[in-house]
Image 1 (cartoon, helix red, strand yellow):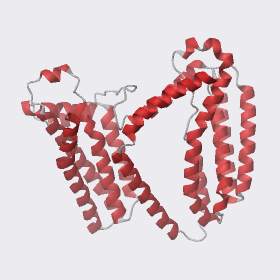
Image 2: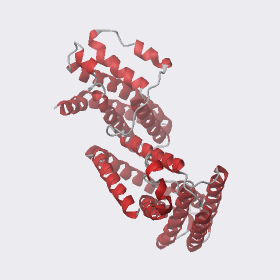
Image 3: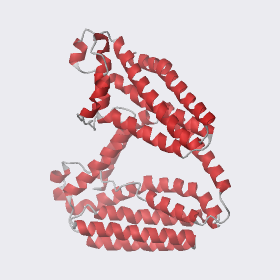
Image 4: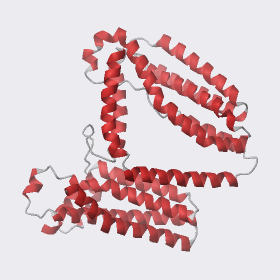
Length: 403
């Protein structure tokens, strides 16, 4: 069964690598570098302004670490057919889960290294720790995540829902106590308590695990993959995920404003797809909400301008695939409408959406900056980028897609 998991893992990784080249394209990497640099610069300046006895800094770090421990799930790579074909092999699934558990640890352990390293300067300034104590904090976080993955593994066995919830609550309480003890006392003490907790949870939960709940295991794995595909779907089409369509009658007023004319055929179709499909509308609303939230808390003009410009670019870039939404519909190919109308329609629709996003960003930037002149510069920058993106970048991008 160990080799069987390795075969499935190789197939899964091959599929993911095919998608990752679309996710980590040049534009996304450039935006990520800009965001990382900007956040690092802002974080560095923030640390310089903190008072000497910033006692709540340790509590903030502990809470962030507690939330970060929920990143990463127990990976089983289970498929619906396993309920039938692997049921006779249930007694041999121990070797399968050993390999899957090791694989489940890789991503969260790596991410915890980054998060722990990112927050160490705050601990050094607020709690007086040394950078060398990073090793103890990291060992503690790894131990807590290790036990949390065992709690998730316990959830795929035939145990009552009350026992599952109880194990999760007990782990949460112990993890919170250990984290706060470590940041307010000694780092090595937190590491020791974390290791003890991991040993106790591992031994106790293994003893209680009796009989696999195949349906629960498959549902959890399918939900995990669905969330992963939803993220990938922001960058490229994913056959494994299907978008849902909602009526949204309250938005019919926007569609009614489009003239029912021959030259507006594709604009109406794209606008209808945007409003009633959850794929692009959800993407647009999420990016606008996240960008607005960031701008609300920023009081630096150039950082506010840079971040707003990045989000406007991201919104426009992610909406360009609208162009191919009706590419495989036979009826649209029978329309007596020139193909050039598609590009013009997409350009008009994205231009309107970017204009709306720029105005919303300008409003939240005004709240954060609290200065009329700086607000005008920010809003003007957003509008210029939206105009340039719509008039220059979109036609160039569509031409590449057609060629």
